[in-house]
Amino acid sequence: MANDRCDLLCLDLPRAERLRSQRPDVAVAEQAASRAKALGDPTRLTIALALRDGEELCVCDLAWVVERSENLVSHHVRLLRSSGLVSSRRDGKMVLYSLTDTGRALLSAVVQQASFA
Image (tube, rainbow, N blue to C red; front, side, top):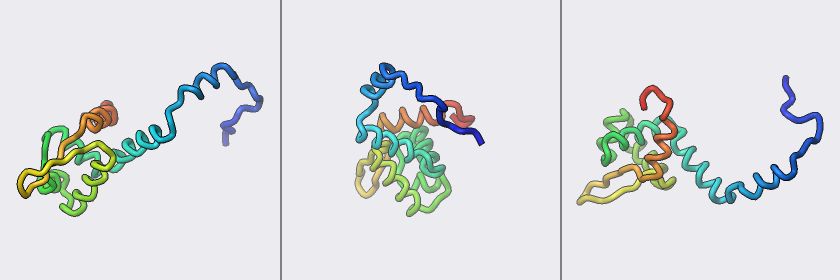
């Protein structure tokens, strides 16, 4: 098994200090990780792709497209919305969902090399 640590302390202090001063704030890193994690589930990724292609859909439509129950899709859409990747609006008795600009950009980055892009 390979050892992933240096055998010699060889810290490049100026470089390491520059990188440390440029690292993101913990709260910003946590938010970005949460957003990335939201697309880490196959059902949520499929929902996001449907919203990308369908622009604005209700849970009924999304459930039909992803072949999952409305309750499950509603749960996943709620997680995507709480991560800032999806927004919603009420139209009478319907709630319609769409990708936010952040959701669209992250989805694009995630699927860029995938065969379904």
